[in-house]
Length: 575
Image 1 (cartoon, helix red, strand yellow):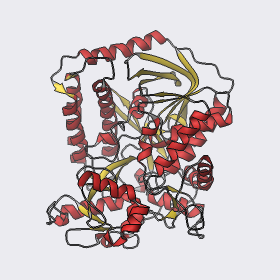
Image 2: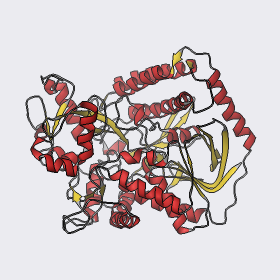
Image 3: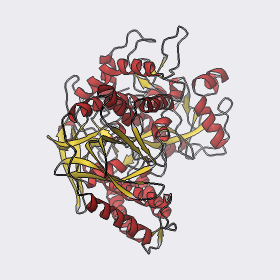
Image 4: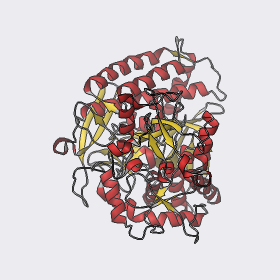
């Protein structure tokens, strides 16, 4: 049996920052990171726009209190304000730490870190590395892990969380190279497995964002928090769904409809294109519904609107947002210096996730904690984003709470023994699951079933929702779950069998999808990214609370937990 003091599942920003903090706290601790890709291919490298912090380099009037208020208001008052205070107070310090690790932030003329405007923020506080910020940060963190001797199991797929009597003891995984199950035990397990954008058919997320950590936690009996809140980013490049960063609008780009109007004046006259993402996504969807979308020939009545950079000029575009220009040019042949980009909302971020306290300890119930189980980053819900995340707060959460969770783990494992595990039982179960998938005489291809599932989620639980829509979606989803028993794999080998991995990922996606739909159906209000046309108002009396969804094969049980309100009383949200 493989063993380490600490296992971190996920090689992105939160996992790597936690691993680094553990080693910096106690260099003798044996830390392992398990990732299904190479760590520098984690989805964190795709984070473009930046990381919010009140450095006051551009706006001396800024403060952590203003950042906290913007975050809570942006969350539609569902964020836990004690967690938001930690996030915003610690933001400047963690940015400086990253700079000292070697992260190459963009600079002002006097050499200080540059800061730009971002949606929902009242001050220019977003630090950035052109439009490749996640890439710049993650590369330096991974280099530092090597320096500190962290063991990296790259290209290993984790199948199961070993959680016995409320205590996390390890994981079951296999190397993609040979598909041999292995048990890995530890004194503490941390999940930093990212989001689940592949639940939907159009997403900015990479192919690996399949909610594995969330599904494994749910199947093991851990509740998932606020899963109904899914962020649709306003500007996914049409039709591919790839993200065009909010940084582009932060630098001055316009959103225009088929009539050439900057229509955000009708929805958020003060913030315009820099309104929060939920408001901007709904505005774009309403423009398209009203027939003011654009077709590929430029005529009205189509499926997208334009993101117009032309007035910004070549020098600004190529120095501030070169990657976004490159993506549009590479994927669509659009030269954004001379022509507008076609965009529409794309599934982007999960506000919900594995419930944790501000030390990263995973909750077992509204008021209970698990033993030895931690989580951080997009897979966790602390909750600093509530019903809607502000742009440039996600990298910040990964670094602040990755660091805090690492520090908590380093203390937690002191003087603890490695747990007892019946290794053979877990190995046998894993091998049986693999063998049954490889040998299943089904009639349905995995890609076919996955597409049907993603289409179902997009149609019935998208930007706008109703009870009727979501009820039909749940019925269809349950039918698709039955069809999973009929999938077959063309590849029955054990060397780098990507089809097997896709089959396991699809099972996880279906668990996550059912929890999203059930949680959304039961929240009878509109709040942040959860917009119901049959309950159009926010209802603080009945729903100013977090959803906790407990999964089982018999169905999903919902409980609720109060929101921490320590700084700002909820009020109407206007921009």
